[in-house]
Image (cartoon, rainbow over the protein chains, first blue to last red):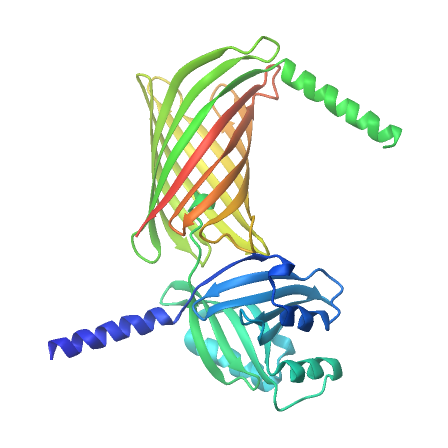
Length: 189
Length: 229
């Protein structure tokens, strides 16, 4: 009985830790980027410099291309072998459909006493060729999954914390992770 | 370069030379050890030991004189409470040992950090009150603006280097006279882990520049930050 309780506690602690978001990223030289990833990004004809990063996170390792295009920040994530994972574009809450917007705000009002949206990224997931066609023709395709990744600062029980939420395009809540804040003692003291 | 630009550069250089020629300087070492501990999710305790050692001092127009002298050691304890996600208000106490003199200082501060693309900004507003036997109390109000630039990636991660530049303005209010001190502190830092980082660089301070003889201090600062879990 005691052992089972202990096991449940361990599993509980483990699962609480797994709900935390951790990221470490550093710059990559263009020649360190897999060719397939470079070729995919080249097809977008971005007019600003594309910066490449290797990202180590709770989800595993990945490669990310970041740039700014027509005022929006683009972030294209690949597996380390160059296979496309997703494409994210920063957006604003008012760009969500009214149904999605009210569902997102309703969820935040439920979860927090006070909140502030820090960043919203429109996330596109799909096969490389399908995503390219989607962006070139702006045609809606069933094969493209669209989500919203939202970073929010929320106050609950007098404590502010930072979270990353994932909602579907229709505003359905999918997941939530607490963001581990960096230690900034050298800027404070 | 146009004639106007040459003229401006010349005037700037001349004014810089005259600024330094009528001034005194002091240079040395400024090592510090900073411990930080989270008491609860919102309360934090900070303890710092900082020592000041002079290696040279004199007037700019005279030849440099090497002159080692231990100056002081500061022991500072601050307790702060988180305000919002990135802010904090704190109160603290400093105990300074300088030869046979003991100086005490109370301090209150508000800090706020913000992350932008590739840079983290830190603001600190602090007021302090210094008390020393048989001297009038000294009141200071100071504002520090710090920028921490990641030298690899968009954020400073473990095993990465960073450049930090602090700029601080201190208003000093005494019974007899008031003064303004400006500090510029560019340092190069390295993060071993999120709880252990070290930085080293110049700590430049200028004061009395409103009067005739301005005072310039150049410290080689080494700061070690440890967060205890």
